Length: 114
Image (cartoon, rainbow, N blue to C red; front, top):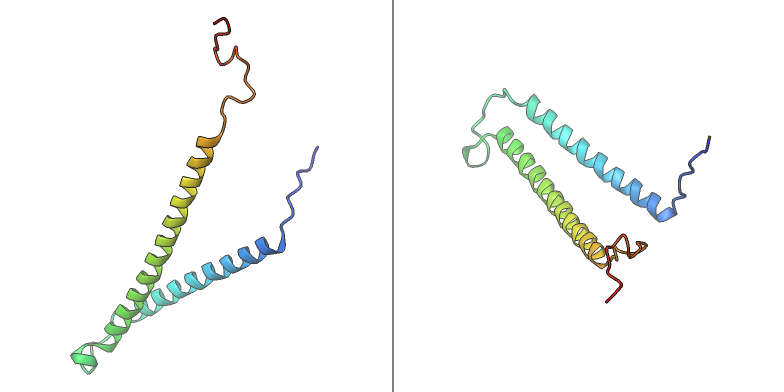
């Protein structure tokens, strides 16, 4: 039974993976802590002593929600940009490939007696 060896990764790939994982964990932790804050203050008493007569807890919840949505939209925009670039690169590479390579004239139905 053959054992498939994994290709060795260089240091740059490992660092990129660690940084990406750390960013993902930070985003998940921020989202979860914001959810906990919102759920813990869902049934609060409204005090009208805040800025412009608004409730300070409601203002904080709205500020956190806006911040997370702004971060999420930036992330989604970046991912979509990268995905479009990847699809364009794949299309260019696919268009440049010679798909007839390695096929015989018989397989290509080529007429040889002109």
